[in-house]
Every structure is written in C-alpha cells, then in structure tokens.
Image (cartoon, rainbow, N blue to C red; front, side, top):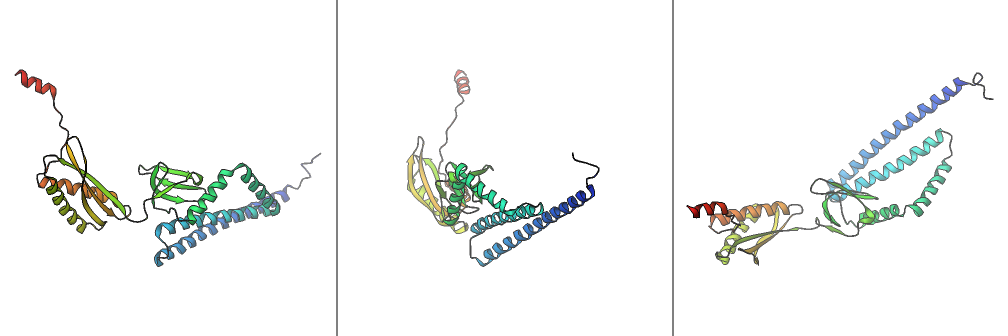
Length: 282
C-alpha cells in the first residue's frame, strides 16, 4: 500500500521544478531561434531581389516555403528535445514517425498527392505569389503556395484554400503582356470609316500618354451588328495586372471622343405609356 507520509514530496517537487525550468528554457530558445531564422531567411531573399536574381513573386514563394520547412524541422528538434527531458527515447519518436508515415501512405493518400503536386507546381514555376491565375472556376491573385495547399484571393476578397491535388489546370495571366479589349456601339446612321478614324487618332494619343499600354490600341473594325448599333472593337496590349485600368481609360476616352464629334451611341429609350395616353386624351 502506498504510504503518503513516507513519500519524498520535496524530491518530487524539486525534480518537477527542474523539468519545468528546462521546458520553459527550451520553449524560449525555440521562439528565439525561430525568430532569428525567419529574419535570416527574409534577409537572404531580400538580397536576391536586390541583385535581380529572381522575380519578386518567385522570391515570395520560395521564402514562404523555406520558412515552412524551417519551422517543421525546428518543431521536430523541439519535440525530440522534450522527449529527452522527460526521459523518453528519441528512437521511439522516430519509430512513431515511421508509423505515422505508413498511416499517411495507406490512409491519407490525398495528403501525399497534395505534397507531390505542390512540389511540381514549385519546380515547374507554374505559379508564383502575386500572379493572377485561373484555377478551375476560380479567378484571383495567388497569396501563398505551399506543399499542401495554394491560397488564391478572389477579386471580391474571398481567400480560397485549394488542395494542390485539385489543381489540374492552371491558366497564368501574369506571364507576358495581357490583352485589353473594348467594344463600343455606334448608330447605324453614322459613317463607320469616319468613326474608326476618329477613334484611332484618340487611341494613339492615349498610347503616348499611358505607359501601361505596350502595344496599340488598334481599332480593328466592325465586330458585330446589334438591334440598334454597329459594334466596333478596340484591342491593346497592357502590362501585367494593368489591363483593367487600360480598358477603363479606353472607355472614358472613347465616350468623350464620340460625344465631342457628335457620333451617337445608341441606348434603349423608355416610353411612359400612361403619359402618352394622357397627352392623346387632351
């Protein structure tokens, strides 16, 4: 029978205090090493950016991945150290990791698929941080690329976490110049050649003033026929991410130019039936 009176509580408390102090010291050391390591990684990639060895998006991607790998390695060392403090064998930790590895291989194949796919996404440079991409039905800006998930923020602000195994097709809109396209309708009564000439002159003026336009804009001609208008199409090439701004500038310039030259842009006219009936009665 256990005798509480003869039990050496002082030794137990002393040993517990020593273990607690060791654990606190290890946790503090872990936090310091992690902070210093993160700063060194950030400094390394900042130097790469200054030298111009990699693009900004690629540097952000690799920095995020490096920080994750460093954190995982540090956590493993922390757990191994805690095992030693509590008198447990590190071999049992490694054996446990082996069992977990088998469990992942047999019961969590999706996780393995995520890691393998993430590795090839990074190796083949299919996407980088700050790239504008389309993945499946999602459009947005890449915020993070990891070995398990990729984070894409939609234009409405939603942050989407996509398992890498679900990324089968990537459309990267940030590789090379992007097309800017604007369609405008003019009345059937207007002179099409005259309208094209006026718009082309204005487009050339806009190209000279806007550095985001790298090619064009060109009025390529009649695109289609509507119920009340003839559709003209203007195409330009813009810098990555600036195509929407260029399209907005084009629309504004086109509207002002057509108004200044008296060229009509047709629009639906609403008729107040009740008012017309009252006028007819009178």
